[in-house]
Each structure stands twice: as structure tokens, then as C-alpha cells.
Image (cartoon, rainbow, N blue to C red; front, side, top):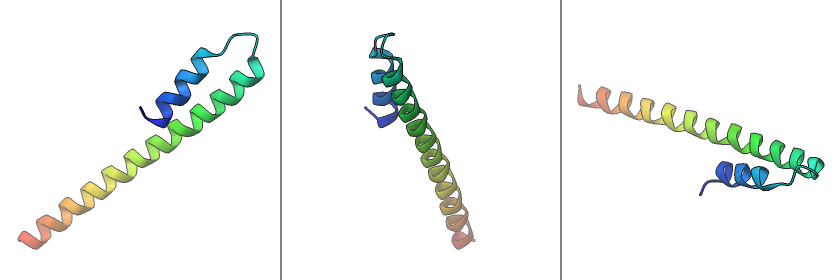
Length: 59
């Protein structure tokens, strides 16, 4: 299970009366989602540049 999924699960398990805790968990969840998206974008860019280099060397 990824960090973003774990953070989301923790947020959903909080009782409504624990709003302060829930808010902190929500912030951590949002942060993990941003990190996850950034890593996906970095991976895509890396794969694209690797493919581009491979095609250049084959030509």
C-alpha cells in the first residue's frame, strides 16, 4: 500500500468528533498525493527522455 493510500485510509477512519486530528491527517494525505503526482510526472518525463535518446542512437 502506498503512502497516499495509507494517509487516505487514516483520514477516513477518524471519528467526526476528532476534527483537529482529521484536519492534520487530511493535510498529510494531500501532501502525499502531491508527492505521488510529482513522482509520476518525473517518471513520465524520464521515460520520454530515455525513449528519445534510444531513438537518436538507433538512427
